[in-house]
Image (tube, one colour):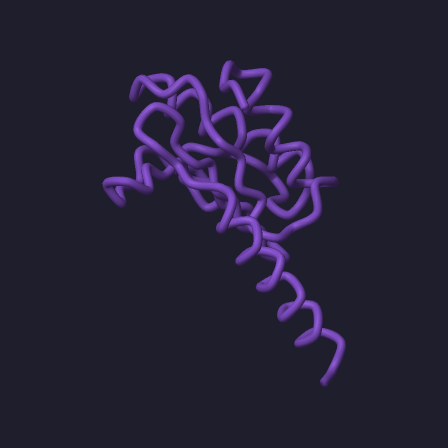
Length: 120
């Protein structure tokens, strides 16, 4: 098995383990993230009803960043997501890192969302 496939398999196993323990409710929905090489995506999900309450990504037209695959762009996504969540009445979330390590862009997004007013 080549190195890239092995990384994907390990991340998928971590993600399944995390999702066993983490679930979003109406009072505390789940903040789920995904990062690709060039972009960062985040959404707030109510798992009980199966609905996405708010979403933000570096592909949004309202987000003007020069580069999209760095920590500054991840901070902008976290701030934008927190603003959209607060407008929908969401103040507390459960953080789902989707098997990614909590450092770099993932940490930048989480810290920016906390600073903008989300509690988790």
